[in-house]
Image 1: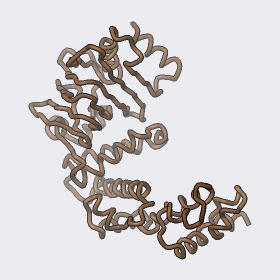
Image 2: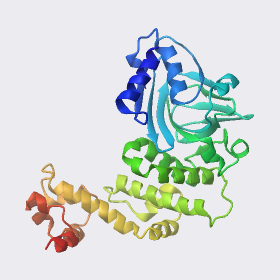
Image 3: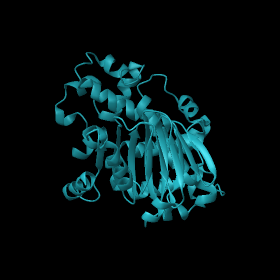
Length: 345
């Protein structure tokens, strides 16, 4: 009754497509596990759960709608979650769950296959067939993508080629796919306007990572390069302040050649140097108006520049003024590039 009321209040207050959060810390210890079982059934499908201990059981689920897919983060103590024939009969909808391990480990069993996923690895299960998820480590955490089975079935033979097969970020393709999935899971709200297109890309990635794409000239290959370009951009954005950042360093991170990295970026119309310079200039501009950076050189070095003459030339070319002029400029002038200043002239 408590859970039914909670779901009703959430739906009435935020709408059926709103984010939902459930945390057992907010529930009395005597009611926690029964509440937990209902959370699993309402967020996912009819599931049965058997914890190692029901005493002070803790767990949480946060669910975000993402177009025709939902993205959730789930964590709890050690337990075994089972999809039984009885549970299958209770549900009218069919889904595939892509489960990406973030912490701890999980033993996955379905269709006479068994695999173990560790952090940075994912596997897929089909809700129309029995399966077992054995979370045999404490403090595990997982990101789950609830995808209509019909969407996956248009691209792959689910039972034969998909279920209980592991994809790891230790392979070059797996690394790109896992980073793509995590980028969605970390900010689904901000990506919602592009959710439908991103979900299509996600399916292409799943197809590619499981070895389904036979023709290298078909869409999944192009999608892979597009996703790789996005991942390279994310990597540069995270590490641009490192003065040692270089194409060879980025290529080594993704397990590809420097030549292939340049080719991928060229398809998107931007070189590695242009991308790196863009991030460094943006950060240097923020540093210049941050009084924690007492000097121009500190602002430049803090953004990854190690040559002040190069920094000054690049900054003036981009912002139409010297770094010192920028620091002293009025607020409404600070973020105008030379092109913007010409348009406003």
